[in-house]
Length: 451
Image 1 (cartoon, helix red, strand yellow):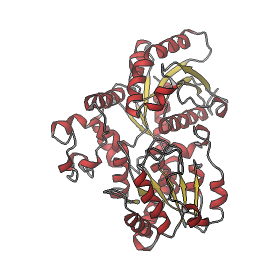
Image 2: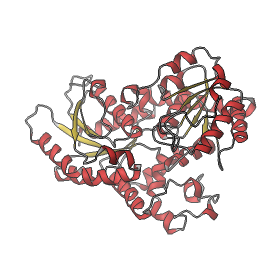
Image 3: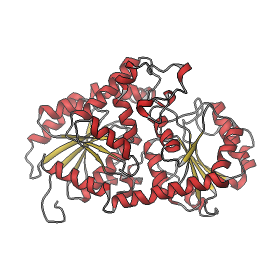
Image 4: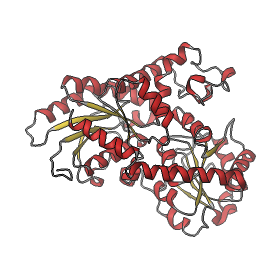
């Protein structure tokens, strides 16, 4: 394949972490490079493997992850990442050895791997293969991860309940409660995983981010000053390439036909992503908060998204009859289409980075309910830096939920937030159309082609 100038370009290898929030941006990035004339090979684990038929122009190569179906159903995200970093080293090395020794007209230019997959550095270095990394969080989160040794030294970590509301001046506007840590049995193993993530980026040929300068200007400037590897914010990826074909769960298309019947900006879209789960009592408060606010809503309730429940059995008896046509519940929704729909007036989200960025780019204000790790940082930036949403804090109560929904959907504050998010929507478009992300992508392509 050749670029627009007729020059043949090489083959790029991509290796995503096998979680929806990581696979989606990696495949979007691969699609961007394919449109620029590169050939694409996706190396992936057998667990959560993407569907090759959705990307007929890509080559897909599965490698063994050593995981049984029982193990994958029981493992936490943290444990999964730790095990893959051990189990995949030898299979990946064997795969790369075969690819690099095979006779091929297409030169393998470099590897682009997820920063969480630490083992790829050792393998790529052994073959002298240039390695770029994709960090799937916002740049503010990456900066916080890189600061963890300093945060431990200064006593912010491990987090103490008595200090939750304290500001962290080194990472303004974060508070102690916003720091991207996760409750795990072994804190040292978590710190080691994050240290590996940062080192994976530090020793790479470049770090690619799904973000853009106009959104994260100060965080980008700080990381560029503190970090040896070049930084390439080339997002938002989904604006180049649709995400639907990378989704691991089939969306319910009735979401769109239901939205078609609703008034402009009248619907609250509620979705907490592919991993986050809530307790049954929290689920009930969410249900009654939505019912009592009197606004229409589209609610994604993923099987397994309520602890101890398979699907809707935790809803109160008669709840669906009470709602009538004012609420629509699905197992999964085509999120980009939903956010782009004129009927959607707010997004109640867990603030995973993909969802946060998609909401900003669609000009939809957010109700923030972060559940773990980087989501707390994203929510703090949404509410206190970009000021394009409001946050539910200190537990879930139906009255608080009603109040927050009304703040956003009715009155002056909601209108101001809506105007700000529309402004960022326009900035995102500009960044791709000859602005900062366009220039950063051109710089990245040049860097990869000369590596």
